[in-house]
Figure 1 (tube, helix red, strand yellow):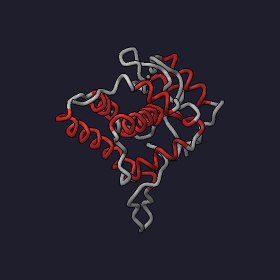
Figure 2: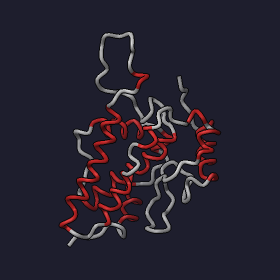
Figure 3: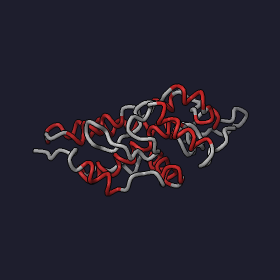
Length: 204
């Protein structure tokens, strides 16, 4: 069973090493306080150096789908929030919702380790806390800062909220905010709002 990584142990070392490795071009903080040179926006994790998966194997996700689910969600959000045309807004919002639905479906689908082959009871819905199980991995480090930015900026500038019926996504976020590694390194809501004030386009 994968053991939790606590602050001050491998997690802190991995976070610093991740930044030195170049996977985070703008920031080494989990919450993504760095800035994109293109938009000035808080920069989410965009790449995951292979050396991280080797040097810190306890942070590597066991299932490759955990690395890929949600990979397009920030690109869809960027297109949505930068769009100035009302006639295109609905389609862009639908595309963003589609990515959230993919994430929700993945989080609701039990992982193989959650299924007891000797049990007669079927596990219909996963109750795991994070993408790859009950402990954070680099897959979560990559996705969670993006989701936090989307949740704040999209609500402020597009009155968009992650649908409440996507219970798995909300469970995922709540579990993340309960962890100091994430909540203590997230930028303040006001910081995200100020940054995206010049990024979000007024529609006409």
